[in-house]
Image 1 (tube, rainbow, N blue to C red):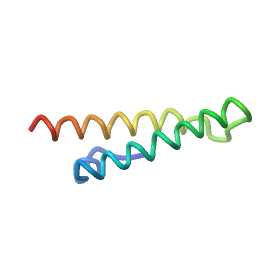
Image 2: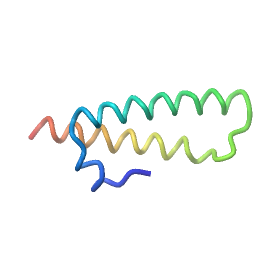
Image 3: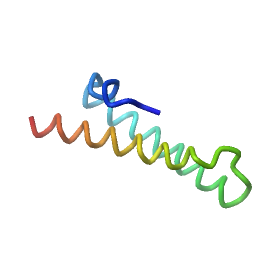
Image 4: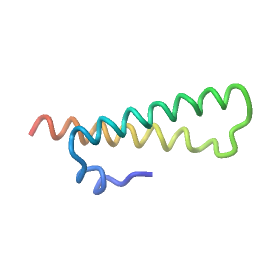
Length: 64
């Protein structure tokens, strides 16, 4: 789980890279969830929130 203080320290390019990595992981977890059981089902929710945090920070850096 990412904290906003950690996210704010990242550069725009690093944020975009991290978002793409998390989206790939989220996709793989969704596939795994639908085909078999996922041990930690809460990780889907955590990843979605992390992506939202990253995109929020990215958009705030663009507007400033």
